[in-house]
Amino acid sequence: MRHHSQTQSSVDYVYKELRRKIMNKEFKPGQHLPEIAIAEQLHVSRTPVREAFRRLANEGLINMIPNEGASLVDPSKEEIENTFEMRAYLECLAVKKAVHHITPLQLCMLEEEMQKEESIFAEKDLDKYLEINNAFHKIIAEASGNVVLYDLIVSVLSRSLVYLVLFESFFDFGGNPSLDEHREIVNALKGHNEERAVELMRSHILASAECVGVHGAKS
Image (tube, rainbow, N blue to C red; front, side):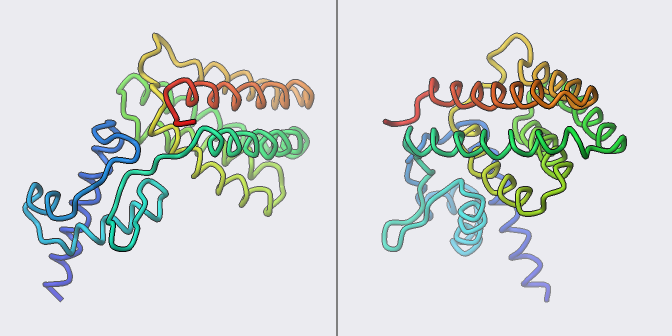
């Protein structure tokens, strides 16, 4: 039992270290991640490194290919464009429905997420920032009242998050343009302005897609 606990602790340590390096853009898209070298660098055996790789692969951050090992994902520009196109379609549908179904509690939850977003952006913590950003969009998806739509949005959010980690440079801006866009969307929801909410959501998502494309996805 103690051995299992120690192994799990090592897996968590390796996972967090590799994820931190990915978030800090210390690896390039497509870069090979040598199992033996990483194990030596982190002073662990190869077993926790392999387990950490599996967790990162489940999050879509790395690819694991038999006989070739692990590497950071390297999505094509077309793949990214397709993902954001689908995300825009789904989230515009969600916000259109949410305008008519969102509750006062859900509006309060959106306000809370925006407050967190402002604070975390100032701290320049990308991992936490993306977590809060996803939470904001999930609340709107949930407010649509359509469970299937919610599940689809959660899936496409996970894919787009990977691209944002790889290519977006959030903290190069003087301010946080995403926060301003979120505020406008919430105001449209409060005013039950369906057309405005859909327009703002589409513009918000396509702006993210543009930033990701500009920062260097392969053609």
